[in-house]
Amino acid sequence: MNIDILLGLQWGDEGKGKIVDAISPGYDIIARFQGGPNAGHSLEFHNVKHVLHLIPSGIFHRSKMNIIGNGVVIDPAVFRKEVETLGLSIEELTERLVISTRANLILPGHRILDAAYEHRKGNTKIGSTLKGIGPAYTDKAGRNGLRAGEILKTSFRDMYNERLKDHLTILRSYDFSFDISEYEAGWFEGIELMKKFRIVNTEYLINNLISHGKRMLAEGAQGTMLDIDFGSYPFVTSSNTISAGACTGLGISPKQVGEIFGIFKAYCTRVGSGPFPTELNDQTGNILRERGHEFGSTTGRPRRCGWLDLPALKYAIMINGVTKLFMTKSDVMSGFDNVKVCTSYISGGKKCEEIPFGSDDIEPVYKDLPGWKEDISRIREFDDLPVNLRNYIRIVEEQTGVPVTIVSVGPDREETIFRE
Ligand code: GDP
Ligand code: IMO
Ligand code: MG
Image (cartoon, rainbow, N blue to C red; front, side, top):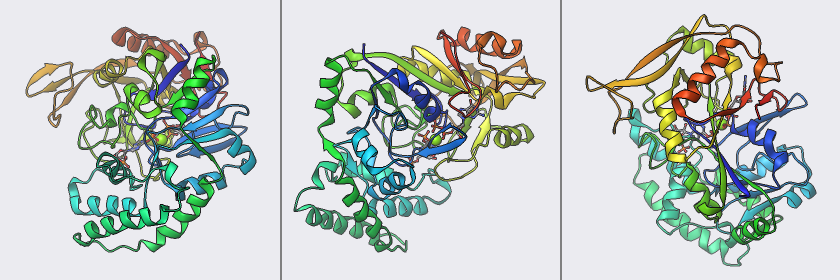
């Protein structure tokens, strides 16, 4: 099998960018298959941190092809900013980065609609990143979207104006002030920049390369608990973040998929609204946030922090068919005398190990485990990790039945323990 998938098993920000960058040398192609600039994927090498929003996390490896697949929604203005701040020349980038003709565009109206919808929701807001994701996928499903392949058409401006008219009609029914021209100028500059890139039918490109023995890593965005179908709806994103999304978001068959790598933090975080059973609204939560620098890579918002939730992790493993687990940020948990993992829930007065539908009334049941205190960031061999951390990993493996084959001990590319 020449295609592997890496995706988040929690509420996003599991460290996907760091690990994709670290394992990219084993692949020829790295491809994003869903989401858009709501994603913020950080990676670090040579003491420099990069945050990617639309561009796949393999971009810093020479000779690798990076693809923005058909399932992604692209905001040309964000794309332009990212291209200009990446530190790679435009010649290099246009060589390495390919865009699907079928990727839908996030229009200026989508961003404003996102803000207007959230404004109207008030206290029940999703906590969206306000990047226009929901409205862009709504127009895609409603068959009103504009796609990357259309930007070269002479009629593109007219097509844009048609969509704008529709968006303005909806917006006028909202009590929400906005200035669309603020976004439009940067957006059209982004369109001009996109024209310099190869915009092709990436489903053909990918399948041809795979049939010639090339290897591809599909890079998920967000996390399983934010999936439009299986996440904590309505507090979710608007795409299928799960492994099945890689097939529809790239045009590949499930038969071609080999490994499904599920990445999780040794604890949990969530940014935005919605249920979070193991959330810690106390000093321990604050310690995790401070030590783990748990502030959003896209919005800068503080992330909610809590203990590892095993029933949620098992659910994510089941939905995705995870074959290998990668664990990040156990270095952040160094220093506690004891740590907890949630092994089941109490819901409606009853103990349960499954996530109940519409899960407002959930109390976690915890198992206490001895913590670890050592600085583990310089450790590169699994057997050199503190015994209590190895015990923690063993419990995760026993509970999930899936091996943990990568342990990340810091944000840098080098701070990675490969267990195989
Ligand atoms: P992504 O969206 O899944 O790519 O994750 P983000 O980049 O949004 O958030 C993960 C954060 O944790 C980033 O700041 C990373 O640099 C950092 N990070 C990743 N792995 C580790 C790790 O093992 N230890 C520590 N301390 N930080 C990590
Ligand atoms: P990465 O790829 C964490 C969250 C938002 C909000 C909900 C809906 O970096 O892991 P949206 O903008 O999609 O309408 O927001 O989903 N969210 C993320 N949280 N990491 C992300 O991406 C996220 N992308 C969206 O905070 O709760
Ligand atoms: Mg992120």
